[in-house]
Length: 258
Image 1: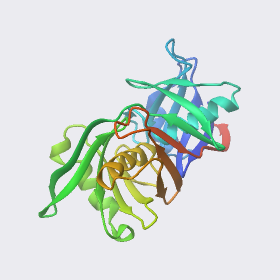
Image 2 (image 1 turned 180 degrees about the vertical axis):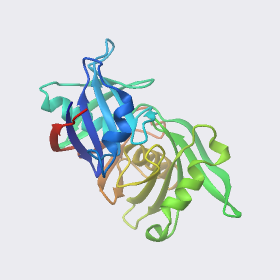
Image 3 (image 1 turned 45 degrees about the vertical axis):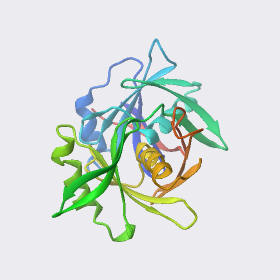
Image 4 (image 1 turned 120 degrees about the vertical axis):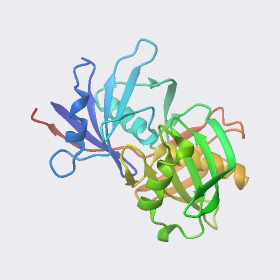
C-alpha cells in the first residue's frame, strides 16, 4: 500500500489515494503506531464525491472516524495538488468546505460554527470553571488559563474529554492564554488521539471564535501552537465565512507491507 506523510503545524497524517475505495480501515491503528507502523495522529483518505471535487475521510489514530479536521483538510489539499489535482470543494462528514491559497499557505472555509455556548459551568477537580463550547466541524471546549505552560494537558484534558456533560461522544479540550499582542497560545487534547497534539486546526478555529466573542478580537485571530501558527479569519461575528489558514507540508512517501 502506497502512502504519503504530511504535516500541518506539527499535526501529522498518513495520506492515501483511495479513489478505488479499497482501503481497509482496520489498518488505521497499525499505520499510526509510532513504534511499529508509520506513525501519525491520523489517516486521511482521498476519495471521489459526485457533489464536490474530492471527499475526505479521516480516522483518528485509535481507529475511530472523525467528522472533520482542519489541519488534515489542508494536508489533503496539498496531497491532491501533488497528485496534479486542483480541489476547491471538499466533501466531509456532513458538509462541503472550500479550499483556497493565501500567502503561500493553504486556507479552508470551515462553514458556520455550531452549538456556540459561552460561560458553560463545568465542574471538575472539586470546583466549577467557566468553559466555552463550540463545534467547528467537531466539538471543542475552550478554557482560558493564566499560565499555559504549567497546565497538565494530559490529565485535565482526559478528564474533561470524558466529562458526563459531553457523553456519549466526548469533546476535544483546548487550553488557551491571551497574549499581550492579542494572539492566543493554545494547547489541545484531542479525542481519538487521546493525547496532546502539536496543533489542532478545528481547535484553533474554536479558540478564534470564542476569543473574538470574549475579548472582542477582530479578524484575523493569530493562534500559536507548539507545532506552528495559524490564522482564523471571518468577516463578522456571525462567522458565516469562518476560515482557517496555515501550513501543510509533504514529509515523505513510502509503501506499507500488508
